Image (cartoon, rainbow, N blue to C red):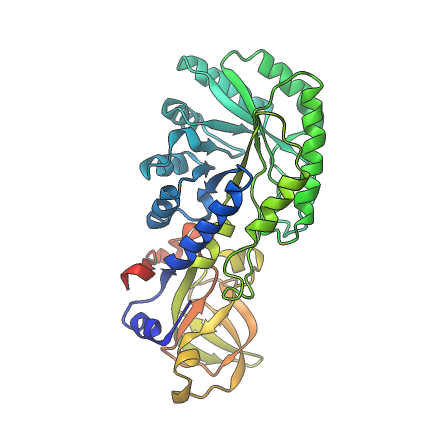
Length: 391
């Protein structure tokens, strides 16, 4: 991703900033498109991963739909010209205002997660003289074997309708004239690198489909969610996830009914590797038990490590590309930010070349859940975006 010429250009830009390699993004998008089209799968980009306008524009131009989890994400999808008929509104807590605005926009589908939500959508649709298309988000109770903060498919999670509720759910739908059931939605978690949970999901979906078939209930759309992980440890070696194997699992094990369409909502796997957070060393501080590298980027620019101790590869770009001018002996550092919180830490006891004030650092794989989760805590200014085609 980086070279000496690029680092020299970075040195002229005020840090911190988010750097987006659009070549990696475009290659990833092309791979998703090619591998999904082999099986006639429909792709909706999960906006929660990154709502950067340039990113959205590129993804929209590729012909993908939009998976949204808030009313403002629906507005962002519409504003960036995603086709209305491909916009899905998911999320466990939709407000009346968000539902009304989405009904008015005539989006493709609401993914519903509770009986009460179905009742509310029916009432609001009736008030607008509209019929709302919905998919039932069903909790498949499949363990994704990922971090407990980002698993979503177990009965203990807040997401989805449990299988034992289906009789009651269908009774509500039967008595909701402004609801049209068109699909089923499943999502078991995020950052899943082992494909076995996806095979187990297919098996469970097949079983659940039988429940509907036995009652002569027609389901025309299946949404299998997303969750495919990326390689945070080797972002250059594995810049593009293995979409071929991912989609092949569903092609092989999912029993697709006649005239059914299959949908996926990919986020992290599409945008994570194209982004890096570029920061500069403010100070190197010697401690009793460890040394500290204090960067000008902190948890306000990348909250994931503070939130659930996530790993991101950290590189001293100055040392990597100008090593003849500095001492490259590796030293253990805690890499931290400037925020007034002890949790503002990117890595502990990390072996890095001897680092000095002014050195440029890259925190890799931040294209997903980096900029989109940034904060103004401590009255921090929002870090800007820099793109590979404009530097």
